[in-house]
Length: 331
Image (cartoon, rainbow, N blue to C red; front, top):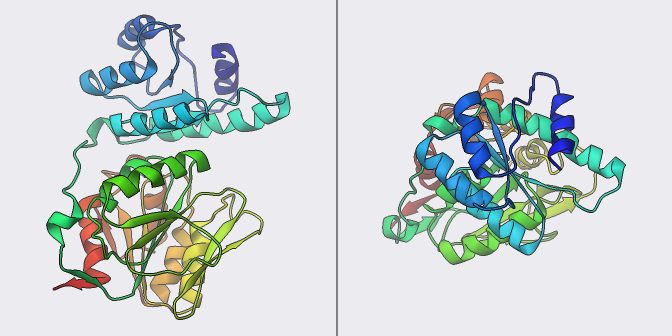
């Protein structure tokens, strides 16, 4: 497996593999000697587990770490733990795949490693905000839709934002570019941790106060259909600029329907969401981006800012407060 991943990474422009290790002890020595920009770390290793070693790395010398794990039940649980500890991304190992499927899947790893190399992991605070119930017990949603997107670093960012959401939060739609199994496990955990209801996006779902919908199915886009109440629609279309579901398509559907909304692009790779956020802004609605200096991976928010699509660039805790202030009031 190490040889396969090394071969794929070595074929990616601007990536050089400086070392490999069979266990945490070897890796610890090589990290100190070679000072890599990024570490790829397998969950399953002899001796100290990948999760234990990740915790050591993030405690003693924070580095961008991409975890490699299976898509089993235990694998997705471990991935969520890895995000909590500070991993930039969790990449699924294609253990049961044809050579063609393996090459296609692992080919994405190079882009992830390059994005990780330019992440803000070393400077990123790891504290969580207080639960929303303690802050906004009298919150009343005004019906304005909140829509935002995230990919690499998104689980961590959404945990922070939703920790500020009250039970009667604004109707919210989120594009989360991650494995659907991991997204579902995040949804399950969010329903235990936060007062609002968090659900997977479903065709025909009604947007109502107190509910957050997360879309991650790579086979379908999600758009908002106007009405009383507005509804989600899952549509089968080609990827938009390489993304499906597409944040630009989601934001654009809200803008075209002239529905009161607020949009935000959080941490992530690529430029998805920038053009859609521009459409929301042109329609007269407020647009936000996660602060590029604090976003785990600043590519997506930077693209939105550079497109002139952002009214305010905010740290996560301030971004959550801005969304709540624009989508409701406290009694």
